[in-house]
Image (tube, helix red, strand yellow):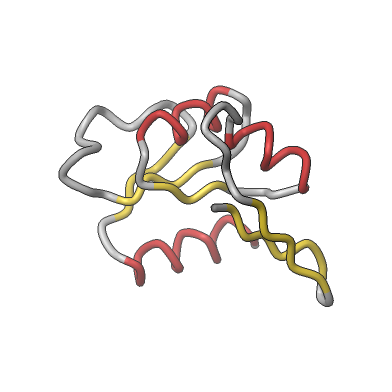
Length: 86
């Protein structure tokens, strides 16, 4: 699922279907950042030039892809998002 704040008055919600790449979906809705716990989605986004945050989970311990960062909890994630938006 992708939820993006597009402007001050509008949110867009998109279900991710199996064959759709999140990097493409993010581009289509104008998202500026992807947050995900699936390594392959984060790697795809980073390879497409979209900044990405990998939420640390036991199943995604591969090295962080170039262009992405790993966070270990929601407070850290929020801090990184705010830094990105500055």
